[in-house]
Image (cartoon, rainbow, N blue to C red; front, side, top):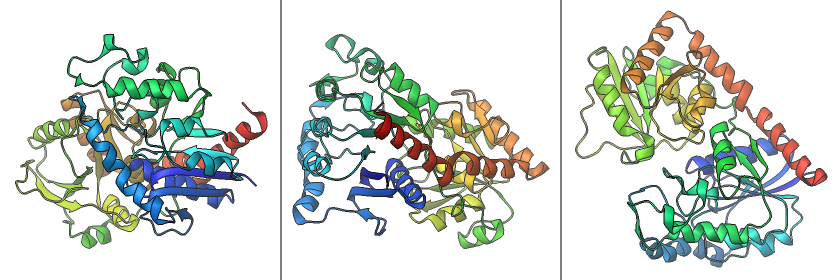
Length: 414
């Protein structure tokens, strides 16, 4: 039996943690021996392995705090997360002495394992590019070309100053990651980034989407869902998810605000639902009745939210995949987004949703109107979104792809 050891900073918090947990559960369902090791344990799932002794627990708490002052050496306008991954751990010794066949690395930052430690693992490695960090410097998202050219003093952005941590971290990866890993990207866009990167352009890379249990994630009754969440029964409900912050440039909140300003001149019979954020002290006037649901951490509440919604709005400038879009589709809810990143793989234009031209505010608004017209016409749009989720992202589909990849790595050594 295949024995797979996953490493992830968390299990069910954050998009990458959720993706790792679902892959692990999909493999278990296929009766593959999968172990998920995490630093931050939230699921309560007995198949997930948290730090077991006080030293490891303390390390998971204090190591990120030790590193934080070093991050301040870099002054940058890129507000995306930056990770150094430079403090040593016991993971190489543990994994090298284990009976695992493949080490599967997910989002392992926050000093869970260092760049050097990863290079010292002597087992076959699969690494998921949940974001751009694996082939960038310290940054998890990049809007410049350094990751394509290689990091040097000559191509440093003019809006950066201080110590060049991005160049330092990129050079550490180049130094210690001598033997290529098997890269898995959740979308064609992310795989293209890998192939265009200076660090990983000749590494093996496959596209395997994130997965979802479509038996668990399915539509609930709309009337019941709206009553459960105290939402109006007779209004159009547009839903937007945010991770407790609207200032993340890549999430496109500013674009959404402009589209809603445009929409309010065309349709007043709309309510807006925002999840992932509590109502701020000074709420923004979107022109529509707005409901803040805060962070919904359990799957049943999220299913109820999607089922209560007419459309999920995803105005992101960059998305490697987008778990919320996948979840909405599994619940039969169409998505309106821009034609960018992994959303191109998720949304079939005018079949399961609408892909607006980047970053055309009017086109995004037209996408909302188009989707509403289709929903009013019949339920075909809702049916097609659910059908695609089952066909493309169900546990059974994705676990088979990973099983084939693991076997290829182990038996073909390629």
